[in-house]
Image 1 (cartoon, rainbow, N blue to C red):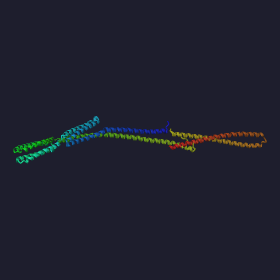
Image 2 (cartoon, one colour):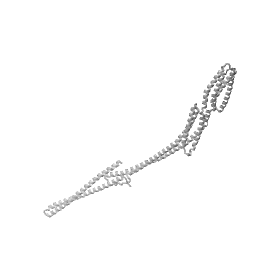
Image 3 (cartoon, rainbow, N blue to C red):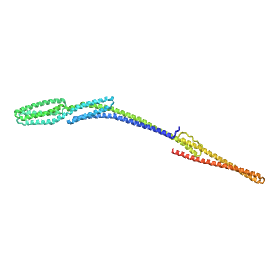
Image 4 (cartoon, helix red, strand yellow):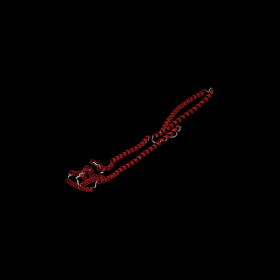
Length: 485
């Protein structure tokens, strides 16, 4: 089978390209798998961790809304915050449903604890905010500072008017002073009722306030009777009316204070609501730990895939590099050896040594060149042999020509002798002349043969010159191939 340089180059580059193509395909496949893992990571673990973090944020947001509802002084502001909390609860339930839908069915039991604890938090917040929306303390404080204070000031003005009456007896003045003291005490009880949050204390104060009001009513009734007897009913009547007018806002304040709605709402806030919020925070922490563990699993799998792919790619690329170097070295050595043989043979021919044979080995173009050089060398030896043979023939013809000349010289000598003896015998001279004619014919024949041999020698020399030119051309080609290599 012929194994040319073209085939070697094709196989070498084919193997290298095949390895590099395999490495590229593996890299693309690995990138695809990494992309799929990243998509899966973003779709589940990452999204789940984000949702769990939002759970935690929303739990603290619920605390903030509840706290603002307790601190907002206006009923309208509290109603707005109640509506905001309901919307917040709807968002939490929607987020919880999204999270639950992404959790495998066999793992959804761990979400139920969060759902239950949030329901407790929502229940506590709803009850507390239903109380907070009544805004009892602020309303009571507003009534105490506004309507009640104005009614109290009116009562005190009437008392001062009575105290200025000269017809008032000492006993009546003592009764008016007692009414004034009771009014001041009752007003203080009203303001204390606004700020006290203990239900038992409020109940006791409500009882005391009721008794004090009854005592005040009795004193006012006695004063009215005294006024009728002493003739200052015109001053006592308005006092009784103003006291009754004052009792209306005072009763409102005590009713709101006794309801103690803000304190009860605060109890929900610091009690069951806070406990539920802590439970929700713990549930969220557990879910976050679980989801972070799942995310870390994705990260570890991705890292493992990356490391294995990297090892394979390094091995494939290293194999391609080693194979490329080996093939390059193999082809360089084989071509260099063949060209070295060709250059050595050409130099021997150039030096005139045609005895060295070139032994071609291989099945490539360099081997073809060596075979051509060996054939040229053999042809040159044949041509040179023919030239030597022609030269030998020329030498033999020259020797024959020399012998003929000697014979001619001998014949001339004999003719001179015969001339001297011509007078003795004409027949002998005639015979000698005939002999000379024969010798001349032989000389002519030898000369013609020498001319033919010389012509053949010229043709052989011409062929030798053409062969030398061919050798020179081939040597030039070989040198050019060696130079390009």
